[in-house]
Length: 468
Image (tube, rainbow, N blue to C red; front, side, top):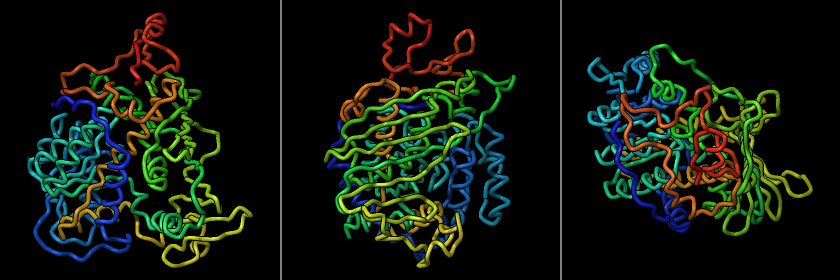
């Protein structure tokens, strides 16, 4: 993959982020109900770039809208078997909408450009490190875009996305980012209750969580180069994933930014590896704890964990002057006053969530993963402005700020991290490229150590991990 040099550091103000985010939400004109009416029947050729589980799921949702003339035209992935697997899955699910012949099944690190060249709407679901450059290529080619979160793994990548988001606006392109809680009715209604109805008063603090078990791992095949091994195990490498605080916990961090109305001004925290101690787990931590401070002095405590045998939580809560609101993607969102009395409860589908049974409340509402694609395609057909890239970049940078704080052990400021020149994702990746990080003689990859400088890594015979 050929990727250009990231742009020079450029500060983006909180006001710019907030203004764009508010305009984006308002511009949809939606309450996230059912799909908009079809305004045209011309064919929209969809291209899938990144054919893993999330990419296959996103393509299936894109092909399951009520819009007419939607077809899957091309697929691409670094690994041919993944492209073939996604195609087989989609042909079983939506056979009448898959129009991909063998000439449009692309494999290799340059597959993204070939898909972009022959499609109208592209789905960007590769490992996050590639997202800024694939987004750039799609915008330059004038394509509408669905891109998964996060949108980068380092500050230069975030700045690239912000730069291209402006160009997307100039070209009247439609962009949706896969932070699906913003498309989920219970979260939207909760936001209305907080912002417009003042159900809990002014927010004074909050907690956001993504504590769960571990993830997949894939053994190295005899025929794989180090680079292809890392691409296949992208989750464990900072240059590809950005660590799980970025790849996964970004959902909850994004909710904090959304409800607070902007990004934090500083962050400090701690993290490390307690269960993830095998060398095969490469670089990422298994826990992060970050304290984010926002411009109004509100502090949000952020927890994420990949550990087994411990309690799990994937949710958000905010404390206000009048009470506390509890959120999670099951649809069971509610608010209590400070006496513990319920003062608001979300009713999915207009029904009491208790009637749906445990874990089934969200089935009474539209699937937010589907709503993302309904909204994007309706915006294309009806020529409505929508560009989620701004808040996608803001929340990605917030997650990266947390990672930089836990990796370094330092108290970091927003402008400092946004303008960081530390770049984890290389400018150019081809099959012949050397892997950006390499194992030492014993098979260990470089892992960040809070408080260490370059000389400390050298003294211990380990590779330096650039942080800020």
